[in-house]
Each structure stands twice: as C-alpha cells, then as structure tokens.
Image (cartoon, rainbow, N blue to C red; front, side):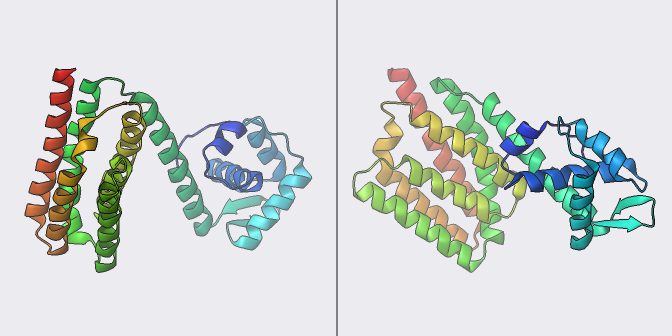
Length: 257
C-alpha cells in the first residue's frame, strides 16, 4: 500500500473514480487497512476528515455495511472492521491506478517540447523503447493483435493516399506496437511520449516528416511483416532504423531553419 495522501478534489480529478461514492469507499478501505486492527466508525470519521471530508458516523456505517456485503470488509464482533483479502486486492489495484495517473501527469508536465532539439531528444528515447517493443511484439503478439496492427497500418496508408496529415495515424501505429508487445512499462512510457509528440507536432506549421508519409507507410509495412512472421531481431532492426530516419529528418529541417 502507498502513502498517498490527496484531498477529495485531486482524487476525483484523477479519473480513477466514476463517482464520489467510489472515492469514499477507497478512503475507507485505506483507513481500515492502515489501522492494522479492527476499527470503528468514530475513528474512521477522524481519518476521513484528514482529506477534508466531513461524514457522520451513521453515513460511514452505511458505507461499511455495503463494503461488508461486497466482501471487502469484515465486522469482527463489536471491535470494528478489518479488510478481507479481496479488500486488500481492491485497495492495491486502486492505489496502483492513482499512482499511474500521477506519474503520467508528472511526466507530461516534465516533458515540454518547444524546440527541434527537444523533439529529437524525445525521438531518441522513443527509439530505445520502440526497438525493444518491436522485438517483443514479434514474440508476444497474438494473431488477433497482429490483425489489429494490420488495420492500423491500413488506416495510415489510406490517410497518406488521401493526402491527409499522416501524423496521428502514424503515431497510432507505433502505439499499437507498444500495446501488443505485452510489456506494461514500455506501453505506459511510450503512450506518454506519443501523446506528447502528437501535441507538439500539431504546433509545428511545417514538418518534413509529414511529407514522407509514403516512405513511412512502406517502412511500417516491413516492420509489420517481421512481427507477423515472428522475426524478432529483424523487427527490432527495422524499427531502430525507422526511428533513426525520423530523427535525421528532423535534424535536417532544424539545420535548414
């Protein structure tokens, strides 16, 4: 369990909870766990107040009965509640989700790209992660996931053929590889980077990479083929070269500007 201590407003802004009741249930589970002994409504009322929330003991009692019914808490005689194993698992899951949201938001704040050299730095990180993602995708992706990758490729191809801005579908293709590689850390980090790159590239009036959509579609096709045929080393090699070409293209434009 983490030592997260956030107020009600911040907790709701994470998007982890669909309503206030879910958030209050989380705080009650957390408070019961942290006491490490059977705990009653009066003590829980004091604990909840640390988050700027004022609940009556009667209201807390109603919430606890609902948690009892769902099997997340257990009443031990007249001593108070403890968490069940299911309650501990639920609390762990919620706190992991909150921590992931906070990490994503912090990374997004930390990664502010306004210059070419910073965009190149981002692509250098992407190159490391995506080379491994392509390798793992060739090993781990299921047949149905490869079919989804093919569909993403075709969306990119259609966009290029229709002379539309290919930036978003191209990045969506890379995000799909990150998803089917089945490494949750690579997937999480690449999603932050890809989200940020979409935002930044939209601020550039001109980018040479947008003019090379036809070339990149063909490179995406070759990467997909190697993933499909389970040639992991070749998939990684092609991805590394593909990202390097993006980096070189941005460097050329920066030099010309």
